[in-house]
Length: 410
Ligand code: CTP
Image 1 (cartoon, helix red, strand yellow):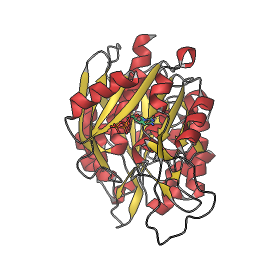
Image 2: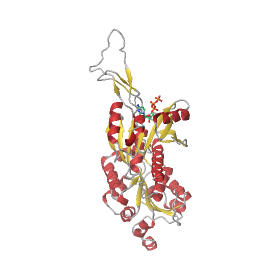
Image 3: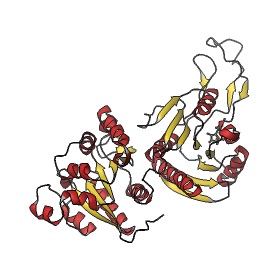
Image 4: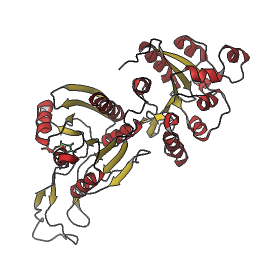
């Protein structure tokens, strides 16, 4: 989708201080290639990481740095500047910039502009993992997302990965192509939150099927892909219920998480989360459970190992797809395969009656990994390969396709 307006779309890019600031240069190039004009504001801290000269060269405009520059203010005052843009993008968004925006603090050019703008704001946070997970930062992020209407800030990232500081976890700035995609969705979308007013249910993680009070059957799903999908849908404005098996992940801000252990519990939690517009089933549901779970711990006995009798678990995806009037308008499954990926996934799609299936080759080390490569297959036979990229990027691409689906079908 491209904008119908004759003049180029305009982005005001606020570059905060952080090692990720160098990526904002790449972002400017991507904007320019997409026909988007960029005006940069560089914060004091940002100056420590990129030079005004390189930003000016790439944007083709003088970089704004100070609130109190008489020359700049006469050319285009900061209020005017904040109105000139069609969209404000903050990349990298530091904990400081996020805190200022969340609390209405306007004490420099960047924060004043953020208060003065009447346009959507997209933030790409980048900071140390402990800072990002600190409740103060999370509260500020939740507050910014919750502001009414156009004031609600849209977030892209941060991604998980190794950070410049040597630590590992969420905090890396989203990659420039992802920021571009989110920015274009805001520039071209109805109000930038194409899924607002939509309800989504997402399943994630493994299930745990008890054998006795201390043992159980489970699998190696980390839940990362499903959590990323929940977050990406929420970032596009959907009201998301995340039905999660046992995993060690934080619930994304703004997402309602329902903990479950067994497939039976997951089935009940999904049913309780309906009606929904879209269901994305990424959980690795155990195919079988133990018939007759022991009430006490099974003790070792000289006669050898106990025989476990297994019975089949309900297929939550198939049931949801065949749920008559309560069927979500769009049901998306995942297919984890090790053989002929596309053929097996297509067969799974029709067997389960879902609309789309995300085919995932798990012969390599996908479980718990950061990156993934998938093919999106639709019931009409169309296919789209999303080659190797982070699970967050895959989730955002999938969420964008879901948003497009609803925009096109209604
Ligand atoms: N699924 C489900 N309930 C089950 C089993 C699977 O909802 N009891 C969903 C998964 O969340 C996923 C899709 O069905 O979206 C496919 O899961 P997968 O494990 O690949 O397939 P299975 O049905 O288990 O088939 P198989 O193990 O034979 O490949």
